[in-house]
Length: 69
Image (cartoon, rainbow, N blue to C red; front, side, top):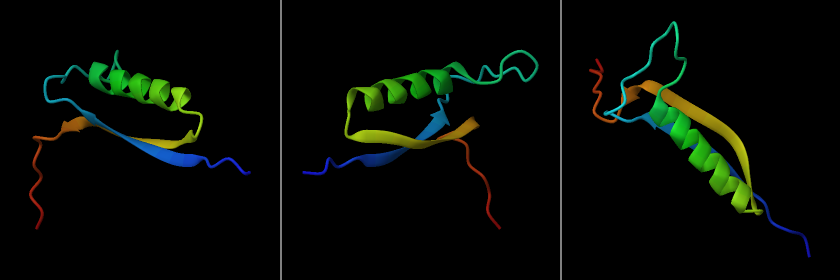
């Protein structure tokens, strides 16, 4: 029987408590780095999953509102 593999995409978003990006020194916030590692670890433990891509909104939190006109 053929083994089923699920392709997963990860969406990482900046935590509102982690606004510590420094463009010259730090390329990514701690929140994003932590989320990336947690997701990679989770997928690695599940042999029926493969990580297709990771999408990142670093610099925008869930409490950031943008006016759409």
